[in-house]
Length: 170
Image (cartoon, rainbow, N blue to C red; front, side):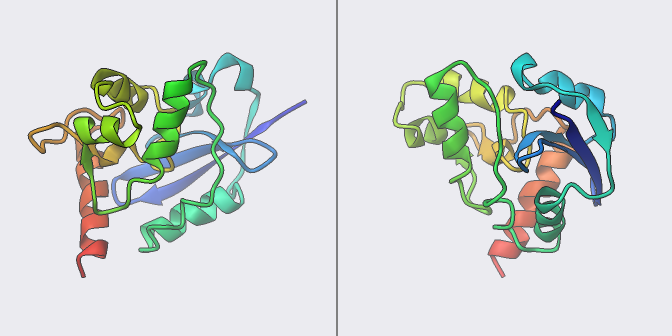
């Protein structure tokens, strides 16, 4: 039987929890200590019982490294989401290519996916992203440059963007 490991890391904007499968892929992540809302984000076909451990291996270390200033530390951590749609899969892969300190607009994000007219679908991919931070939907802004929405709160999104900007402009 598959069991997901949950591990929580303290951050300057609150606790951040990952749900990791036995292969080391992150199935859900977010700024919470409660695994129930995270598990609810996971597609039913990828859900499993959860056990809490202080360390979820590479995912936990990568989050700590990101917080310590190695912004590329999250890039190598595998993620596993089920979408049921080719565009959303492409959009999530594309989000992982958006560099820290270089946020894009929803329009720019749609263009990066190769479907410039799919702005609403690009926004939906952000909204349905279960793997916050590792699939960095926080790097997508409204056309006017304002923050827009973020499942974990605009204060968190603002801090993440500021953290990345500080480290990429020094």
